Image 1 (cartoon, one colour):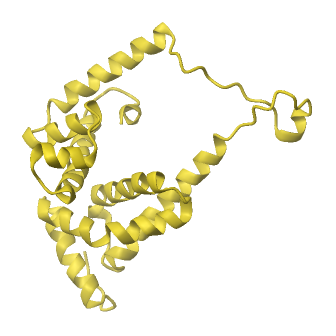
Image 2: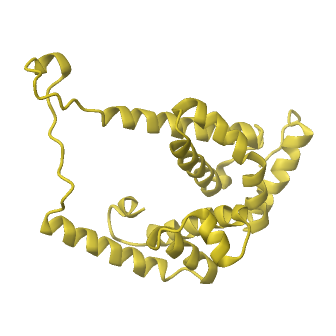
Length: 206
């Protein structure tokens, strides 16, 4: 990575932290997260106007950024790069959400005027779907078991036992910022494991 002369002192400091994070320094991930979590959250909140969605999207943005640090170029400030990732991810979310909006007005006989009527799937799974779901769950548990100590426990608590971030912090007696940063790292490691798997469609399991 070549550093340009256009970076501010703050951006240079961020770059130093990024280099530590690339080497696997967990404290560096935590520091980056703590520095920008609020600003990223409020930027996204203005776009989606929903705090729950904004929080989820914030975590996704950091996860994508952390898993792509090797592609970051110090030609731009880390904050600029991070906000671009967060903005693009949020725009994709908004687009996908719009495609899921369907009309269920059964009294509307002019279906051509609204692009047709879509069927809504029932919440109940068929036996075949239930079997597939069970297989996926077992597959994920086998892959998660390959993670080391703390990372394995974090994934289990968050995704299998459905603990909140606050509950995980209490359970493991660590700061909530550390929980979030290490969860990003845990998911990155899990994705690396899945990358090595020959099973197709691995993205569906996360």
